[in-house]
Image 1 (cartoon, rainbow, N blue to C red):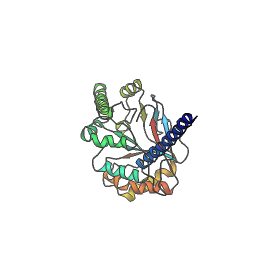
Image 2: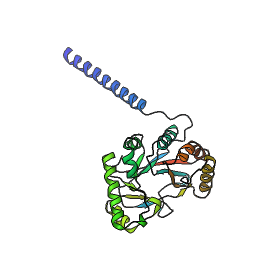
Image 3: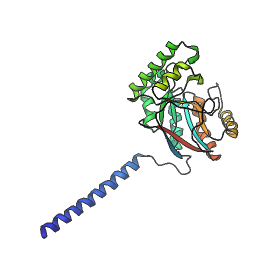
Image 4: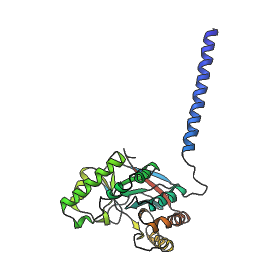
Length: 257
């Protein structure tokens, strides 16, 4: 009887220790995830998409399943040292997660920064290798550019890209068929603010965003993390979205980081 009671007490103690360990692990995990500051814009929800040959963005395709007031932030052409870090800092300050569409050339140039995109919780897809308008290239050149970009993406991230945006939104039959064969999702856009135009001030970009949102109240926002003016304006643009009551949706793909 005494022996059984000792075993029981030991098991009870072990259970308590296990529970305490679980609490400590949970606390450690919470500590590893930085808390959002009070009043941050935040990420309202995550929309997980299947790995499928579909296309979204009403500039060219069907809309994403978003409610009014829901926006997906997407950034093209990076990662660009200097500008992309500032974009990441602005997003982190507001606890916002976005989708980055990188080029192969920039993956070669800044692989560590490219991995930081993923490591900070953002989704990463492809935007070609050399960022040339596909409709100006021969079918063989289009496929060569795609394959080179894909090889670099797998080298940096350890798995294939799940989504793609055409440079200049210039779609071609050749690439459409190649992407569909690999069940890669095409992301077009619903609105943009021409932040690639040189010397765009923060005030000008904010005015363009306000104008675009007046008519397009949901969808994919096209921005460029390779542009320093975008990086500089992003804190103000995120504050504008918050003031106007927009909610951020983060896109993820099944079996993708």
